[in-house]
Structure formats: C-alpha cells, structure tokens
Image 1 (cartoon, helix red, strand yellow):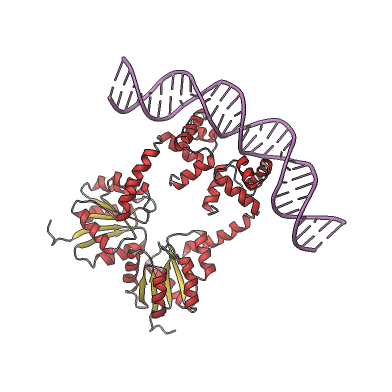
Image 2: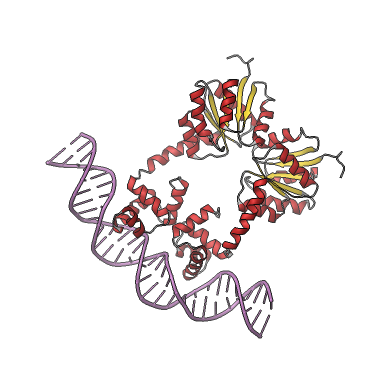
Length: 210
Length: 210
DNA sequence: AATAACATACCCAGAAGTGGGTAGGCCGCT
DNA sequence: AGCGGCCTACCCACTTCTGGGTATGTTATT
C-alpha cells in the first residue's frame, strides 16, 4: 500500500464535540482522510456503504445501537473493513467483547492525538493496536475467568443473595431448604474469597450479574 | 462589554483528544479566544494566573485534583473568574456539587459545538448556563433530598457497611462503640426503608456514594 | 431557657448467619 | 463399577444482627 494514498477513515461518535474535534485533528495529518462522520452506528453504516472507508473509528457508548454490536453489522456489510474502537472505559467486558466481535484495535480516549493516528495506521496496515492500559486488562480478564468457576445453582443463589434476600427467602424462591442455601453461600464465599454479604453484592454488581 | 473583544477561554481536560478538538473548534469562532489549555487542574491554575481568562471550561473527571475541587481553587486565586463545567455525566451529585462550589454553568459533552459556544458566551456575560438535561437533574435531586435526609454520621456508616464491614469493624474504624453503629444502622434502615445489608449496598452503589 | 436534632451508648430476647463438619442421591465420564 | 462434581440436607457451637426500647451529652435553633 503506497504512502501516497491517504487512509480513508469514518468516524462514529455520539458526542458532536469528540466527532468534530477528531475530524479537525485528523485532517491536519496528511496520511488520514476523514471520509465521513456520524453520530449513530446505523447512520455510520450507511455512509460506510457509499464512502468505502478503510478504517472505522467508533465509540462504544452510543444510543440505539452500541459500538460493540455495531462491529458485527459493519463486518457483515463490509467484510474487508477494519474497526477500531475508541472508548472512555477500560472495562474488561468491553475490551474483550470488542475483540471477540472482531475489532482490530481498542484505544482509550485519554491517549494523545499522535497515538490515535498511529493506531489508525496500524489497523489500516492490517495489524492490531491496543493502547497501553488495554492489553493489561485483557490479561487480567483471563485470570478472572479461571478464578471463578461458579456452578449454575451457585450463581442463582448469589444473585438472589445480592438482591437482598435472606437464606430463608432464597430457599422459598428456589424451593429448597434453607440449610442448602447456607451450603451454597458457604461455597460461594470460599470460592470467591469474600467474607461478607456486602462483598458478594458488590461482586454481583461489578460483574454485571444483575 | 464590546463584541470586538473576544472572550478569553482556558480549557482544562485530561483527554488530549477533547482538549485539542475543543481548541480547534472554538478557534473557528471569532468570539472566542483560547488563551491556554491544560490536562490537569493545577497546571490550568498556573496558566490562568498568567493568562487571566474570562472563562474556564473544565472537565470534572481528572486525576489528582478533580474538576469540582478545582472550582474552589480557581475562585480563591481568581475571584472574578467564571467556571463552566463540562462533563460526561449527568449525575445529580456532580451537578449540584458543582453549583454549590460556584460553577456558573454545567454542560454535557454530548451537546453540539454551537451550544458550547453559547454556554461560554452566556457565562462570560455573567449569566449561568445549564444544558438541557442538567436542569432537570437539579430538580430531581431536590426531590431526592426530601426523601433521604441522612446525617453525616449515617452516611459514613452506610458507606462502610456497604463496603462489607461488620458493625464491629465500623466501630473500630470510626472509633465509636459497636452499639452506636447498631443504632445508626437501625436508623438507616428505617429512613431508607431497606431491611437487608445487601439492599443497603445496592443503595450505596446506585446512588454513587462509593 | 426550652426544644429539636444529632451522636453517643446500653439492655434484651429472638432471629439469622458463620464455619466447621458429614452425607446421601444423581449424573456423566472412564 | 468406580470416581468426581453437583445439589441436596443436616448438626453444632458460636457470633452477629435485629428490632424493640431507654438514656445522656452536645450543639444549634427558637
């Protein structure tokens, strides 16, 4: 791929501020040509079909269709496209789900403009790009998975426990004895290394098991 | 104030992307002159002392000194300054605390560039400016207040309780007797109408008291 | 000076949770 | 048939929480 042809980029972000700012910034770099901008994933897809960008730089948090679901839509309609995610959040879920869905890179919004350009170039070349904090998070997430082999029943009990039900309540809900619920609770605390009910509730909320 | 003199604006945001983007955008408007940019509150304050901006446009979520605490610092050092907050979040706490601390406006990052300029102009004229969603939230928050008149001590106990500490732990942490913690806990449950520890934890997390 | 709100502290009896076991029945894999 | 994982269930001694009180000192308000 010759350096003479600029990389065609489509920007999708529901913050007009970021969208306009990014466009203004990227256009000062000769290597990059912004062929379109959109505030929503669906609108972005329509533009992409016409403008045939090399790279889509897309936010995750958007109304209607979020950026992660949009990855699949783009890859279906435009198989050769490279999607680069841009997000405020270094959450494990977001990052690993993005990668699973086919994103070629993931950068945080607190990186420098230079790094964004570098990421666009890398992705356009067919490489992947993850900003510094992101790859660490991917490692952590794998460690997490190994550490938490909860059974189905345990997950149910955990969820009810966190929603504020007592052992007796849970027993009634699940149609088992309170003693059994106690056993599950014990196993949960042992497996998760958490001693208190409050801790379990935090765990549930933080891991989105609600 | 004559229209000939542009409004001197200082931008503070720890996202280089937003910072550079905002600067590029605002400079296309003749009414506004960006006299400086900073990625941290303290650095911004130093620039402000030299550049004497009319308006400071500042993000809330920043490392070291957050935007809300920075409002006070700016007003101490530069009494005439007008601070306009720019935030991703429409959280009640953020908005009302900002106003209490002396911010003259609060706009969300999903507004248009035009609205940002309008906000800067309004604040520079000595008016206040709150973007659409924000004033609603201020109303809500007042409704909330009536329903939840927790005392300072109760809030502390609630926070520790939700973090997974037992009555005894909390007593030790606060240097009071466990019996007193019990009393606070009773009052909390009564006031909030919540019977279980898990429920209290949810309350804390949902209301962002972490 | 009186009142109200707050933070502190204790009593008590009953309910619930804790942490250590053990144990049987069921299912899938070898 | 044997083994392991899962779900079920119980025992026991101990600790903690619960929900009902009462009470005292301080501080702010009236």
